Length: 240
Image (cartoon, rainbow, N blue to C red; front, side):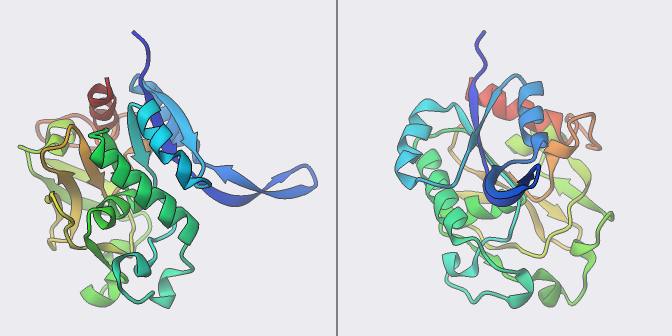
């Protein structure tokens, strides 16, 4: 059986070769490895040409919207918080268009961390630009401190990872208003949304944590598989 082609959104960053520093298209290898382990064939997508998006959607069997710099607040009609750092408008434009095209084509989509926010904004939702200020604490942004997450067992996400997840996932943005067709399906104990799902779609899931880092076994509990491998398995299965 041939492996379904899964597109992986990438970003531009300075990289070094010998004594040269050049802008490069980068993607952490953990995404590609997680897709390969699940039976897919990863394809890195540079955020360079919006005109190619229709071809990507026709040629690919699924999309992973990856983590990275926070989504610019201008994309959902808010003011950029200076603590969030500089946005990457070219990446925002490319990934929002890619997400919309994938949803319209019923192409399986997995949004990870920033990618969950992209999926929500692409569907007309909004974000909390600086979560610590709203909560008046840093608990969602503490490096190395696990989030305890409750997952709806009836959701596609719950069937993939179980009813509980414990994952390290520091973040300073979060879903505020859900986009059209999206439901919250996972929550931290303070009710901050940690997972979303697109209703009536073959596979449209977003998670706040990084399952690609946990495909060696994961820490999921309850009735499903690990937080990493089970979710990529579900994406690749939908992509077949």
